[in-house]
Amino acid sequence: MTLDWGGGSGEEITKEEIDMLSDACTQLKEQKKLLTLEKEELEDLKDDVQEYSEDLKEIKKELSKTGQEKAVQESKASQRLSKRVNRMISRIGKIITELEQDKVVLDGQMDRPSTPPIGENLISINELITVMRQIQNIPEHKLQSIADALDDNKDGKIDIDDVIKLVELIDKEDIDINTSQVAEIMVMLQKEEKLQEKEKAQKEQAAKSPVDIDIVP
Image (cartoon, rainbow, N blue to C red; front, side, top):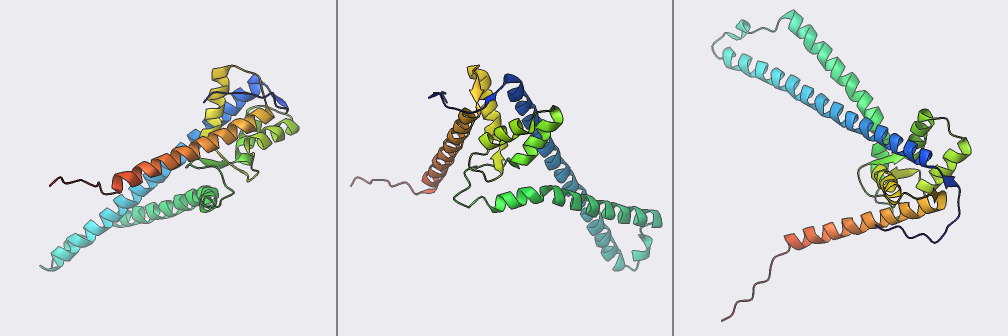
């Protein structure tokens, strides 16, 4: 993508603030990556516990045919451990569910025509601004200006990948930039992403369609 400015008006965004925006995106990406990893590990633990329980039942079932089911009894210590593991799984599962509630809500709104972002990395604009505020003390009016520029359609959601692309473009061009220009780039990125999704869908549809073969008599 080539940047072509028509001047534009808006509040200037400094190089330092762009760097902080980049750092905030990096932190949020790592948090989401960690959450995904924790969820996968929890699912693996659930599978292991389920497999152990099923194996134990199967062994008892087979031994019951010969009257030896009492030969396999889970120790009290093992039973207590199983209960603790199950409680831990339940507790962690609830935490993960709470952390994912915002994402579930966002995903459920993806089909609305007024929602331009596409992708699996939607975050709330407040989440991004909160992380930026933690990195360095920035005046609230400046944070609000940046938020308004990133969230041009004012739906409270942005695709973090778009913000990362924005930062990369600005760094590559090595230019001064203002909030109006940031808003323009975000719109262009969203349009570009929609076009890519459309082309991908068309290619997949073409691959599924039967190929007409002309048979020459």
